[in-house]
Image 1 (spheres, rainbow, N blue to C red):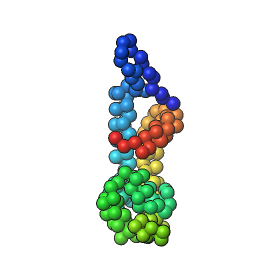
Image 2: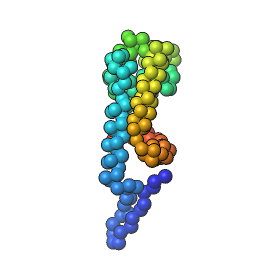
Image 3: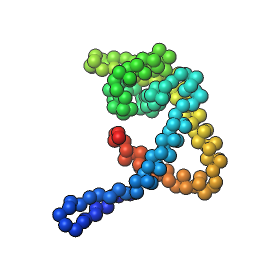
Image 4: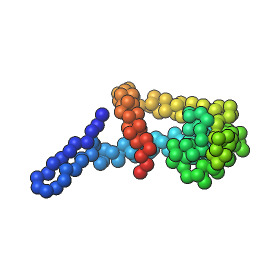
Length: 166
């Protein structure tokens, strides 16, 4: 795990933290992750269903978490309530999600994936996995191993960024 190091300067200055990696490396990593995300975001299945990137993320989040309150979904996906309501409403009309009032709190609502929504999410995941596998086959064996060895660190990085929006 990468950790920051404290650097103490002579004189009255306060200690400062140096970044765990240089700024250029962090920028390259951010750029590579962004490119991967954009290239994998929309799949043939998502295009056929006319889903926006926001709707794709919401559907996958609902399928992953099971029935979820709209407020929790908005928080976890970082979507404002107006956008959330519009996206969820469209997916309800398409038969991908169901929406129900909370019996204990009529101001709150729950959403859940329908069987059609779960099938679409699985198709999108499968298409993304197939795209990654096809791209990996184009890489050298050493690059494939480096990516495989980097997975635990990338998963830890994703977890460290959870809930921290720029």
